[in-house]
Image: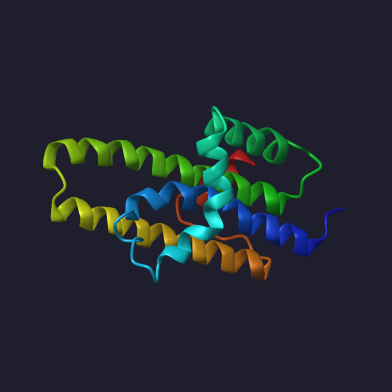
Length: 152
């Protein structure tokens, strides 16, 4: 049996996966020295994804096989791990559409506004999810949580 405090910490740390995917959307927004500290919690995930060959796929497989499909892991950790993975997948899809828009519109004010909106939206979702994890509750994110409950 895992300590509930450790479960809460693990669940909070799992949300650094989608946060590391959201950081590139605010590359010019996070250059402000006061906001650059927001990147620090995601550094371990960014390190794994950047410096280990196939790090993103290995991280996904490790989370999926070791946490989500492991019957010994608690439901709380499984729920948060799968929710973090689904948030990360949604950011990857948004990134592909964003790159298409970037080719069409260039680096315009509309693109920078859209990019900042994605960053702020993900930051608010992750802060909400971490707050709920600290409280010991499942963070309910519309659309994502229903898909997670179906999968589990």
